[in-house]
Every structure is written in structure tokens, then in C-alpha cells.
Image (cartoon, rainbow, N blue to C red):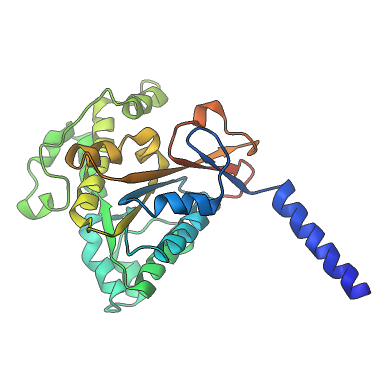
Length: 284
């Protein structure tokens, strides 16, 4: 009888934790709660998924892995990420093919400081499942040059080899895209038009390498900061300029003090919106 009581107490505690204090709630673009399985059923039909994260949010990173595993049971996948720069593709390929150790990989590649906790699990999944993993981002030194040395013209002097690591020049640019205008607004007068041109270089380059690696019948999952794909802008704006009929799905991550109702400001940010409790711990 005592064992039965203890077991029942554990079930009650688990149920209370799960339903009374959820770490996150998933919504559709209109603010309706949806199940994880329902999201997967929609996304498995797409060609491209842009998974927008908050870089230091552990729930977003956990759901990236869970979403990838779930979709990997349905479709052949191609993975790609903002967190790897295009000139490190060879080193990433070497690690995926077991040509170098994880120690060598870490020493050779410009990795984000939260690689081990947040992105290595995705790389290891790709390695285990023999999936391609595409380093999509512009090398940071080139984006910095655009920001600090006169905008897009800073890219004109790159060698032919270096230009293979960025989107084809000239890079299309629309300064009136709302997300770009919002960047300048947030900077409060400390930003410049070249700052959003640097952002555009990142978006355009990520879009370029996504398109370059799309395969018929396969699903490309791309991991990026939510700001690069919120409101179907950023990366997707550049993707659709070249592939206007592409079938896509987007995910965004936001934090709210109350996860039980999607705030008006977060409605429409993506096809699916992960609302994480604002008290959630950070990975850095």
C-alpha cells in the first residue's frame, strides 16, 4: 500500500509540474495553442524550415533537437546553421566523416561559446545519421568590413576564392524591410545604414547556401537567430527572391512572463511560436 501511495504521489507531482508550471507553450501564427505533434505534421510537408532561436535559451535548443529528430523519422534531412561560417565547411565535413576528432574540430573552427551545450548535439545527430550539415553564414570578418568600412563596396576587393564564401555580388538590399528599420530604431541613433547592410549580407549569404543545397524530396532545416526569420523577412526574403514558390515553414522563439496567452506583439512572427517562461535559465 505504501509503495502504491508513493507511486501515486510521484504521478501527481509530475502532472502538477507538467500542467501547472510549463516551461513553454507552442502557438500557431494566430495565437492558438498547438501540439508539438501537430507542428511536426505540418512541417514534414515543407521543403525548408527556418527555426528561429534565442541564442541563449535552453528550451529553444532542446526543441531544435527534438524537432529535428521527429522530422528525421519522416523525411531525409539536410541541416544548416547560422552558427557555422561558410569558410569552415571543409572542417565541418571532416568532422562529420570522422576524418578529424572533436578536439581538432574545436581547435580549427570558429565556434560560438555555447557550441558544446547548444549546437554540438545537432552536429552529432547529423554525424550519427550521415546527414549533410551546411555552414551557411558569411565569415564574420566580411560582415564586419561591410559595417565598418563603407558598406557593400568593402566586398568588391575580395578574391575570387573569398567571394565563394558569400552571396553573389551585388547583394540585393531593401532598407525599408521592417526588421532592418527596427534594428536602426533599437540602436537609438548609434547605428548606421551600413549596420543593416551587414545584417543583409548575413541573411543573403545564409539564403544563398540554403538554396545551393536544397535537394528534391528532402527537407532542409536551418537554425538561426529568430531575428533573421521573424515576420517572414531576413533570410526568407532572400530565399523567395530566387525561389518564390518554395514550400517553407518558420518557427520563432519568444519569452513571456505569462506563457498561457500569446502577446499581441508576438502574433504573426512565424508559423509556429515557442513561448518560453521569462524565468527560464540561460545557457550563457
